[in-house]
Image (spheres, rainbow, N blue to C red):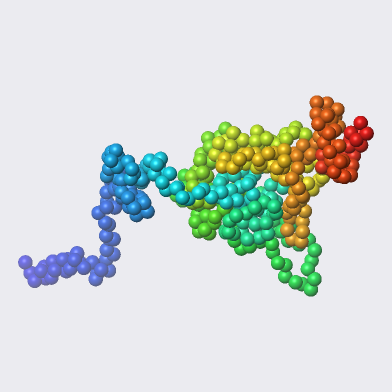
Length: 410
């Protein structure tokens, strides 16, 4: 072998050891784990995810129950069971009572007794009756604006996310900007606090990567807004947009369960707006009139409605229908009459009085001549004894002045 052959061998060895010196691109290093077969890689990823979830639960909860196979009698008084792969928290009933002792349940009002803190509540009514107007007025109050008296609010103003699937930007501007130009080019002072966050849906061609269904993407989006903005309250206007078939769709039931979990996990208060079915004229509002009444009533703590009044085009009335934690209101005396109108740059309601619902749905003289005749006539006479004019009596009872005149003469 010649010396030239030795030089060739040395050069070949150098090319293999230091390829970049000879302009050869080195293959990237592939870690061993990426060389696993897919099924083994999935097992490894699952185990890592479980370990991370377990660590998060222990860090947050302060106790580790993952290695305990059985809860003994001796452990029961101190049990506060929570693990990463079980849906349920578990503790003895006595532990719940001990934790609550000396801490009376606060039922702080967000909008009178109609909506309490920590509740998921439904506001419903017919199309065009003013549900969104009332909801926006409640939102303004909860974020630091004027309140709709006499409905109490016991909480400090906070941030509120208003998920609006009803109004376009132009419609919103028309409702909440002045119809009259300001003199000398003055800048208009808008009626809301920056704490009120309007959330409108984007038009997307497809779901983002990582989401298998629109439901998962929707709930993630709501949760993301709540956590990023730190909102204490959310209003969804309206729930039909989230689930069109509330009566029977499995997706509707899934949605309601998820909203309950969302409320409890994030400790927020939720107001859902919903539509009613068409009801016969002169019929009091009932829960059965709401679209998806069975589904909604199962999962919400309270429900109230807004209805139109036959006493005037701008009159509405607010009626409480369900309360889980407060005594039932007497609908005969607690129906609140309100008047819709625009003052400056704000479309809203002003309170008039409390009255009977039948004064709004109508109690004509035909009823007076029938089964309720004596009761109706007696009420007319009592109001007359209180020095009310026939017009005032007619307005209060929802009848014509001719009917009142006949009752007084009879």
